[in-house]
Length: 113
Image (cartoon, rainbow, N blue to C red; front, side):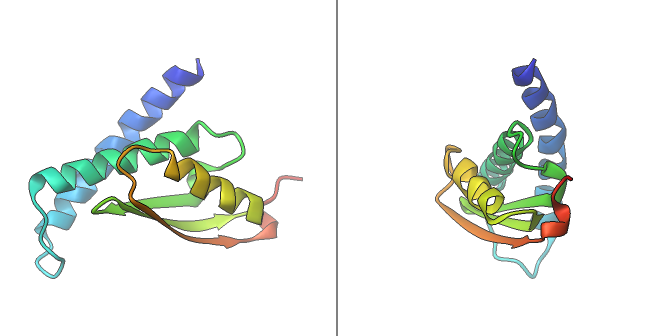
């Protein structure tokens, strides 16, 4: 069941990542990448989001994922430093990730009481 949930989440998030990548590709102010590089980054983003969704210690709604040239940037907020560390750890396990930039903010008000 968890595997099915991850696949459904990855498919939904992947579509958004591909649409975002296409919009990003159209932006003339950004550095140019080939279509293959955009697709690869979109796949990495999708896989990272799927891993976050599948991790019960993390909330995918609070963590945004962006990938450029294999460098994944995590933004948003989490309840604890341990969750921030877990997000980095999970991201590093994804094939295609060359570096993780963790810009997550720790916000204790996010903890579930």
